[in-house]
Image 1 (cartoon, rainbow, N blue to C red):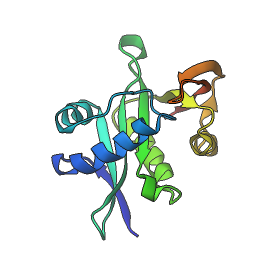
Image 2 (image 1 turned 180 degrees about the horizontal axis):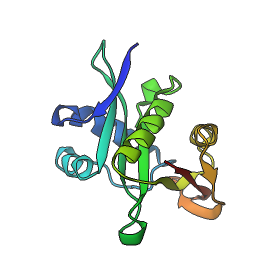
Image 3 (image 1 turned 90 degrees about the vertical axis):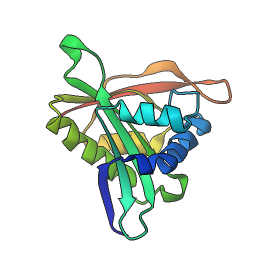
Image 4 (image 1 turned 135 degrees about the vertical axis):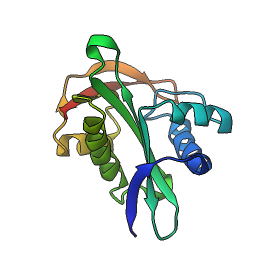
Length: 163
């Protein structure tokens, strides 16, 4: 399997919308509750500073994606934020790590100084472990900061990394 990370195109929308919606429907990682459709997906992914896709160059299959954008405005506009989604069929292959590393490089290219994650769900062990492995610093714990799909609340962990 040969995987490249590249900027999304309109032809990627069905695949990336499906992958994004998988994570939203799962209700354990993304704060969004509403699913994307073709119209909202183009606006959403197109409005980011960068939307990257992980593509298997042999099969042309999209395996995952990330969005990168400012975390805030004005005097805090140098801080970026990102979200990552990997197809349920492609998890465990290192795609997430590739996406995070690419987003760090891309963020720096775009002039961001910091990459910050506001709400990493504590029970999302693969994400927590990956961010620690890549040198992200844990900023603390926000007790009950995330509403799980089952109606219970889970702690969230903000992380950041200087780019």
